[in-house]
Amino acid sequence: MNRLRTPRLPAAHRAGRRLLPDLLLAAAVPLMMVIAAPAARAQFFGGNQAVGGISIDAAGIVRTVDPGALAEMAAARRTALADVGLAGSGDGLRKVSLAGIVRAVEAASSGGAPLPPDVVLLGGLERITHVFVDPDAHEIILAGPAGAARVDAGGNVLGATSGRPLMQLEDLIVALRAADGARDGGILCSIDPVPERITALRRFLAGREASAADPTGTLRKMEEVLGPQTIRLGGVPADSRFARVLVAADYRLKRIGMGLDESGVPRLPSYLATVPANAPVGTLPRFWLEASYDPIARDADELAYRLSGRTIRCLTENDAVGQEGIQRGAAPADKVAQKWCDTFSEKYDELSVKHPVFAELANCVDLAVVATLIEAQDLDGRAGLDLSILKDAERVRLPVYEAPTSVPTVATGVKKANAWVVSASGGIQFQPWGVATTLDESDDVAPERTAALDSRTATGWWWD
Figure 1 (spheres, rainbow, N blue to C red):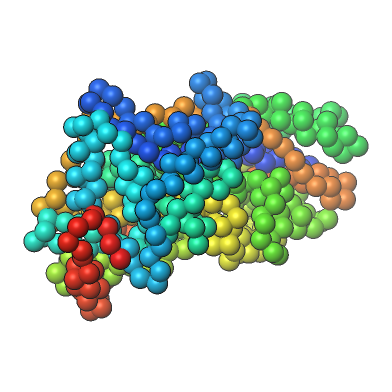
Figure 2: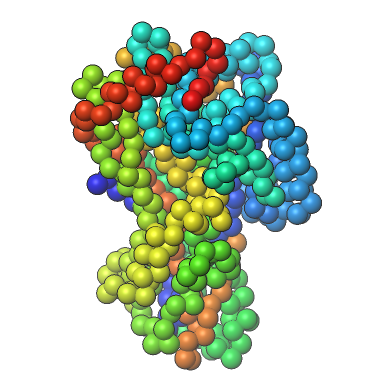
């Protein structure tokens, strides 16, 4: 099993108190792309970069968005989708032609016309389960379940039946461009307190100002002492939508663990609500997300591939905190934290409906694996399909979002005996090459390719 593991973020702990740096960020969900002359950038309909009530200002700092602005954005996107013409794929697979997407992008590039929403939304795909190569037609086909589009109150574009976010062409293009560079470091996001601030926080927690008698004042002072935290992104451009999805998923995990956001799922309280009164002193639980797949099934001719077994799990381990600083993973396992993570993992699909950013993360992981599969197995070369226009940042310049650089710390906690207990978590990282290069030959993938090619229609670039 291939594990795509996240980095762990440093935190601070003293005398039974734990701190969670809560880091706010959200993903933008664009709708319509206009590709003009080479010097122009692609523009997305609706332009508003906010989702979930959060945006980023020109200084890279997270700001709250007025709810009225989100409502206006959602209304504009509903108007744009009114005539999109997408329908659900039912129990079958939606087949999407990469050659058709290339033709649409080339036409927009030469004529300056907007890409149709169904191109921007990859034909309504909700995920990708198959990749088929057709050398005779110079074609790569992406296949998976698909849905008709609807827009929720936050402006997210979702499958009308499933409630899952639809995949985005913008994310696929970023994944294709990032594939080769992800060989070594993978794709990552981390959000780190400044080391000197951690030392200052330890001094504060050891002093008289930190008082359980004044929990609100203590928590606010903890936020002030720790100060803004630094966002680091790797493998994808920091000013891309893909990058925002990574950080937004980490943000939502923190919020749910802290109890600042309800999970919306039965029998999944916050982690803080499950901490016992005798919580151990001197340890710091961390939570992160890890994705795994079964080996990719392929046919004997290496023209058909099936992705399966994708699982995204919440994992935890305990750092020990002492006079010499934080020792990562050095403390005994926390059974309470592990149980909370197990429940979070079990409920991940339900959470993805209540909090679409978790499904957005899964979509980005799928797209990164598919893009890396194309790169690793030279599928575009085998198909005779030129994907250079999608990979060329000068020919197709994607929208530029305000790059996140820092976020304020938000602390919260629950009182257990005489101590205030808060939690820490953070980071997302995955290495798509580990998945895309682990293949098993299977006899039943070739018939799926044959059925997909036989069902192709004479017109149109996607079909069921």
